Structures are given as C-alpha cells and as structure tokens.
Image (cartoon, rainbow, N blue to C red; front, top):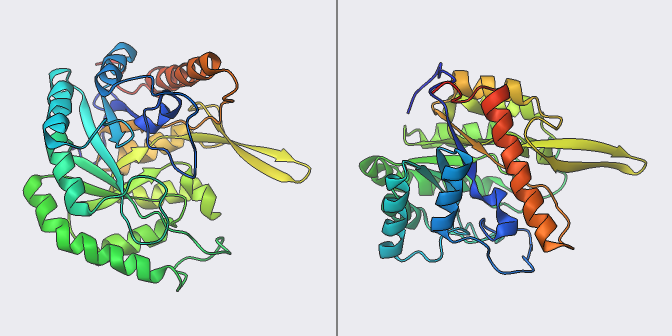
Length: 306
C-alpha cells in the first residue's frame, strides 16, 4: 500500500458491498429484514463490478454464501482472475449488541487469508450509553475498549505473519479520539483504522475533524455522503449519492489521498429507499452507485487517467 501523497491515477476505486443490501449483498444490521430473496450471487457481484468499472470490493459476510474455506478460496480466486482487490469486513463479539454476523479476530484472519484480502475492517458494535455528545472515554464503555486492545494485541503477530492489516472503524458508536487511543495502546503496525466519512455525525462529532484525525492511521475507508434535512421538530440525516450531501467529499478525498496509508477509495451508500416497489428499489440502488462512481471518476478524478 502507498503511505501518503497518492496520485489520483494511482488511487483504486471499490465498493463497500453494503451499498447493495437491497440486492441481498451486504450484511444486514439494526433489525433490517429484506422482504425479497437475494438478487446476486457472489460471482455475479464480481461481474457487475467489472461492468461498472470498479477495481475491487470491501466485502462482508452478507455477500459470501457460506464461510467454508473451499468456497471462500474459490471466491478469492475469482476476484484475483478478474483483477479485483478484496477487503474483508467483520465485527467482533464483545458481548454487547449483535447487529450482524460477528467473529473472533483469528477466524476473521483465516477467512481474509482464504479470500486473498489484505485488509480486515473491524467494528466493535457498542451499545453506546446516553448522552453520546461530548462523552469521549465514558467509563461505561472503557471496559470494551480495553477488551478490544487485549484482543488486538493477542492476534497482531498472526496478522503480521499473514500480511493482513486490521482496520478498526469509527462506527456509529466511537469517537475518533477513542479510535486513536486504542491504536496507540495496541501499538502495532498491522493494526490501524477505517475511516467512515459520515459516522462521526452519530456521535455529535464534526465528520471532517474525525477524517483528519484518523486519516494518518487509516488502512481503508467507507467513502459515504449524507444530507441534513431540517424540520420543525429537529432534523433528519438522509443517505445520498456521493457529492450530493453535506459532507465535503472533495476535502475528505484530499485528506485520505494525502495522509492515509491506502491507495483505495471504497464507496458506500445507504439511501433508505422505499421497499414498496421491488423493481424501483433495485433500480434506484444501482443508479445511486453508478452516480457515485461517476462523481469519483470524473469530479474527483480517481483513477481517471489510468
């Protein structure tokens, strides 16, 4: 991986598979249930990626039909044949909440090795107590951070042996300074961060400040945009295509490109599309992804002159 000053032409463009959750490709969480059957196989997903001009996928268990090592190796071989990079997305089970499929870090490493993935994004899935805003290092969450540090320290040598990097996400349950503190305590070159460009909002934190804080230690990212819509009774944060919202995506990209030890941008969308009409929902999900790709290629010039 490049370690800073990445050129636009060197930057690769991928897709976080959660962006296709209406197609059944993406780990469901927060109690969401898809009202129809899965629309794509893993191998059809790769064909779609080629059709869309993507360079790779940030992939979770919602994509993989099963975790049998033989099958996972077939998936990895297919991605390699198509020249698609793969990153693996997982969550730990800290005995707190279960928002999806969770794994032991060693199990995650073995799955990533079979996939041929060189990065594993890790979420802590914390049930953050209220109040959130201004509650960095709340004593009620510190035991979970300490357990996370213990687990990463135990498995970091295995990650180095496999040449696979862990990336701890600033999910919608963690402040950027908490991520940095955890990484400082682990103190291993194969344990870094994953930037989600929106998630800081869930903590009442300035997303741009969070991106700036985490970028120097971030091995991967979720490149996502949202819009704030003000209402009489407050406001609503709504998913939009990259570049259509209230995150300065140009600045976010510049921070990642300049300071983050990665040469990949992973688009993520979460549009909240109505499920009343299946055909319309599936069409809108794909159209949004295509719009994001167009923005990244032609406005941000990611890989556009390769």
